[in-house]
Amino acid sequence: MRHLLLSVTLLISISGFTQNKTGYVIYNSKGKKVSYKKLLKTVSKNDVVLFGEYHDNPISHWLELEVTKDLHKDFTLILGAEMIERDNQNELNLYLSDSINQKGFDTLARLWNNHKTDYKPLVDFAKDSGLTFIASNIPRRYASLVYKKDFVALDTLTDLEKSWMAPLPIPYDSTLSRYVAILDMMGGHGSPKLIKAQAMKDATMAYSIVSQLNMPRKSVQPLRFIHYNGSFHSDYYEGIYWYIQQYRPATTIATIATVTQEDISSLDKESLGRADFIICVDEDMTRTY
Image (cartoon, rainbow, N blue to C red; front, top):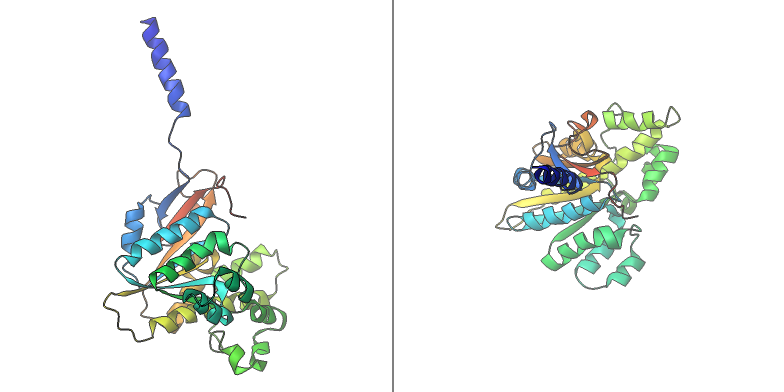
């Protein structure tokens, strides 16, 4: 009997050290755990998927690629990303068509420092699959111009420069909660021009998406647009989401957000309603930079 008790005690002790570990959990907007299959089935019913990532989070980047691969099985896809600016579309097209190699792309385009590890797999999937990939974001120098001199500074730009952004003047609502949150994070030191610069990015990315959806196509398969962006740009159904609704109200949109938590066994209350699906990642997860 004594040996039996020792064995049971040892078994319990060992099990405490061998519990399954998971790096992330997917939740729906109400905080219920859901499967990847459920996420995929739901987002596939929408014209646009706004995949909100943390730029240094490997789970975000891996799932972006997995969702893209899986949706490609049943849909014609257009891909787009915040991380490539609209005035680099020609360079992106040259790479996609094999007219330049990766070294040439690195040289000619303003790519993020983590492009090779985090975004090159997405661009290469588009390249290998013959998909359209859109550089969706406003060139940073023009967002900076808004931050320094307000919207009015954009009126002085050339027609070519204006073609790299959403048509002026853009719709604008400074009371949107995410824009208010930017100023709150600045502790009262932020300028209203800061959220106007953010709005120019959101509007341009939304306009880039809508422009593609409005183009006539001959594809037999239904069309889906997957857009990769920082989670803040689409959290709580604002940012890019809000602007798509302004430009093309009938568009159906699914949102995915990324958060990190110390304990991922349940979703923090502050993230409820953040998106249709929230990828909750263990905050100890290794970062890509």
